[in-house]
Amino acid sequence: MEEHLINNVLLGLLMMTGFAIVRMRSLLAVTMLTSIYSLLSASLFVVLDAVDVALTEAAIGAGISTILMLATVALTTDEEKAPRHKPLLPLFVVVATGAALIYGTLDMPHYGDPMAPIHLHVAPTYLHVTPEEIGVPNVVTSVLASFRGYDTLGEVTVIFTAGAGVLALLGYRTRRRNSQNPEIRKMVVLRVITKLFFPLILLFALYVQFHGDYGPGGGFQAGVIFATGFILYALAYGLGNVQRIIPYRTLRIMMVAGVLIYIGVGIESMLLGGKFLEYRILADDPVTGQHLGIMLIELGVGITVAAVILIIYYGFVSRQHQEPPEDT
Amino acid sequence: MYIVVSIVILIAIAAGLLRAFLGPTLYDRVLAVNMVGTLTVLIVAVLGFMTERPEFLDIALVYVLISFVSTIAVLRVYAHRNTEAAGGTTGPGDK
Amino acid sequence: MHDVMHGVLGLYNYWIVIILMMTGFYTVIARPNLVKKIIGLFIFQTSVFILFISMAKIEGGTAPIISEGARIYSNPLVKALASTPIRYPTS
Image (cartoon, rainbow over all chains, first blue to last red; front, side):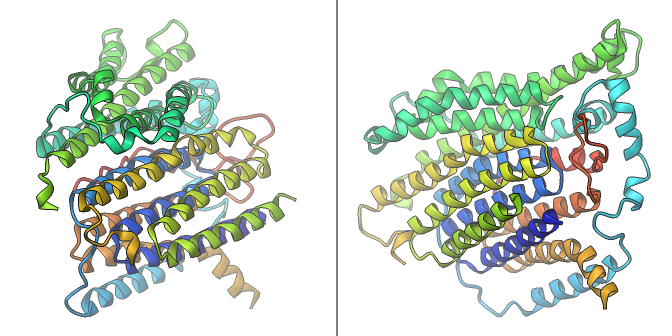
């Protein structure tokens, strides 16, 4: 009952935030409202028992997507132009689509109904089989990495392709080491806090990476948290210094290496006489094999995600400073 | 007991949202985002204990660690703008 | 009367999701600014996740991480679907 109340209030707040985002013109303000929107939706995901999704949303929404949007806004203008004419046609399209969709929901099973078709098909099997065959408490991880390993391989490839696409579109230029803004040198609090938090964030990323079998987390989330740590460092100490820790060349290798680790696990299991990505062959004991396989592919996912996000960030920020000042 | 706590937190989130909607300056919005971030940490923690799965504090920890990064990014973009404009044109905070 | 209330509460999540979806859709089709369009897509995407996850929730269930004492778990499959996509706002 309490959960219902929190769920309904959070949904109401989300709706209000959504309307405000549409109405506002200042893009900086909109970016910040988007950050709030993502915070609220992450709380909603926790209420709805989707802790892994909440962790993803926490890692991406609160950090990366806001930062990338800000980088975009910094490259373009802050103010959105007023529309030239009344948006009557879009409004009509939207209301009509919405009405049709709402009509469609009338036949749907109610929220929380245990007899809904979605709960009767494969989900009980996953829940039932996971403890014995996979031995991993987090069923989401076992579905993601083992039962549906092919899908996740597809996802990783998509992320890899996105990274390659950004690389092709934005290009890249290495920065000199001391190319940081002199204003930032004066921000002592920021620099000290960053020094304090940077190792903690990296440590926590490793925790999320390797504890993903037992609690919420996994490669995707860990990769994002890892990249966020480096972005924080870049914000406080300048991009040039981060590139001394992780140079651009390393990132390109990492981006490929993650996908290759994933595929390599699949090929290894084929060489041992199983099917592609059949982890139980990997060790003498099937459950140990599953553990090993899941750990390795999660590692691959984490490496690729972290590298791609850092590449996107490098691409945006190195471009930001190339622009001649008279353009803005 | 948890329900009372969560209602109070939700009211506080609503208040923070109101400030983010109304503005009027950039700093109001930055503070509102920060406040909603902190309150989200709290509500996730409370939810973890309410559903008797306190291990979900992990999510709250992620927020604690990285939610301030975006705030820093906002302020850096703003500072960058101001140094470039050299006090000439109107910044986002002047509306 | 009680039935109507029950129906409204049972479908409330879906309705809000549809309103959010349409908010995002409107932003995408009606606003010329590219950043705004991407934010519209972001709202749309989140609303789709909320739709999936609302359908996966079971009354009285808990997150699908096997532990002592918990007996009913919500549907793990859709969570695996929803937790993988990573956004890349490249405009």
